Amino acid sequence: MEKNETDDEPCEQCGLCCRIFGPGITPTISNVYIWMERGRTDILRWFLAFREDGEPLSCADLGPEDLCSVVTFEMRHPQTGDYVTVCPFLRRVAKQRYLCGIHDVKPEMCWNYQPWIWGETYFNRCPALRAQQKRSRRFD
Ligand code: SF4
Ligand code: SF4
Image 1 (tube, rainbow, N blue to C red):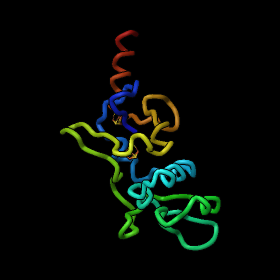
Image 2: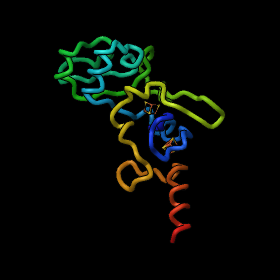
Image 3: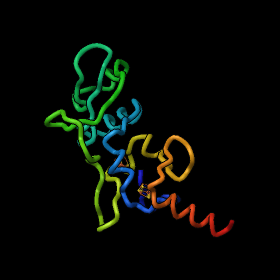
Image 4: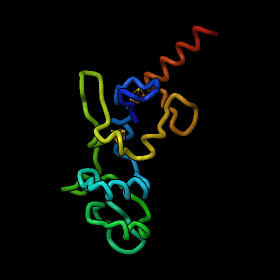
């Protein structure tokens, strides 16, 4: 959700969207496949896979061949199986600055998140959106 140094985006890295929506992120099959290929058990263990047949399984216990039977993924605590309240990959790097700890391989929905554009991901509490609205009012 929030940008890193090299992104050309208005995000101010306040971390608010990740704190609010992070626990609800769902990776795509391709995201999970890439994590498997790269041996990212540290990420896989935070997701359960719900399959057409059988009990949900930790993504860390699946192989690429199992992915075709997965219906959906959900973020869950690896030890308790409970829902999480904060995305485990969010890193606080200063008092009011947050970064994504898995930025390079974060889920597609985080890459596509643009709260400053009207649509599905519009988030009116985003400070970058507010700054943009202020700038555009100046030119009205
Ligand atoms: S994976 Fe990264 S960008 Fe996505 S919600 Fe978590 S901290 Fe934010
Ligand atoms: S709420 Fe807006 S400014 Fe804050 S991290 Fe999310 S996108 Fe960036």
